[in-house]
Image (cartoon, rainbow, N blue to C red; front, top):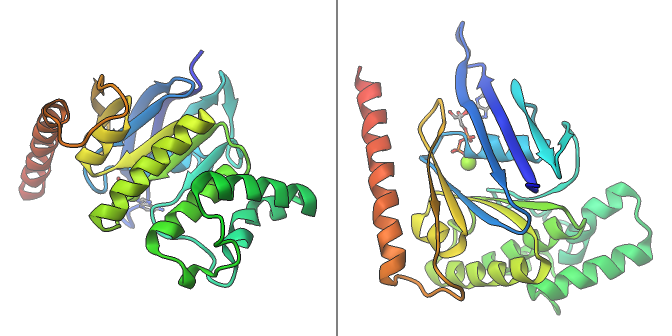
Amino acid sequence: MPKLSVRHVSKSFDNGEQDSTLVLDDISFEVKDGEFLGILGPSGCGKTTLLKIIAGLIEPDAGEILIDDVEVKLGHSRVGYIFQQESLLPWRTVRKNIEFGLEVKGVSEEEMRSRSDAVIALVGMKGYEDHLPHEISGGQARKTEIARSLVTSPDILVADEGFSNLDAQTRNHLQEEFLRVWQETGSTIVFVSHNVDEAVFMSNRILVMSNIPAKMLVEYDISISRPRRRATSECLTYRAQILDILKIEQEKAMLMQRS
Ligand SMILES: Nc1ncnc2c1ncn2[C@@H]1O[C@H](COP(=O)(O)OP(=O)(O)O)[C@@H](O)[C@H]1O
Ligand SMILES: [Mg+2]
């Protein structure tokens, strides 16, 4: 039984003109329990939209999302979300940011404390609990966001654009930390990125999306043993294949714009 099933999901948005723009066109795929799935696609192809539909933040026009073979609806809270933009509340400490979702749910003070302690230790933010977001680094902010998404013990974790907005060294460190968290928690991950190297380094499997209306173009099983090393010939072979596909997509998009 797959952990997550995306079945025939379509979504259009109003574009201010008479007809609307079809963004996701009949998207279907499955994610196994404990799998690390990477999704790559050109900018604007609907990756964030897809993650929001999976997380129950927006409703698809057609299709359904199933977790453990049961359909979930708008507003469900089975998915932890690591947002594309930094999203910590600046006036709340690291701990208070992490506990926010539990507070909203009315979880007791004691349980909140024990759960936040566990995820703070898991992501390596011990000693920074009482810092405000402006008192920590960009990498630590991302770790805090990971902890916040884990604190409700979600079935599935989705990460939007991974760690692409950070400097290379911080990004590499966070990728490794995130893999450690994945292995320690046994979570099921859907990891969206526009960075091919990042996706190849992290994922068990990669789906590549087309330009809008987005379809799934190809699927790669990344059969590289772990722990992985960066920029090995195996990684570079996958990278070259995926970059070729993305280049063709980009050329198609440019031709469409001209016509
Ligand atoms: N709320 C919205 N209203 C109208 N158009 C939207 C909305 N959200 C996204 N879009 C459009 O849908 C397309 C896909 O957006 P998005 O999912 O953010 O892409 P990606 O994350 O792959 O860059 C874009 O053309 C974007 O302008
Ligand atoms: Mg996006």
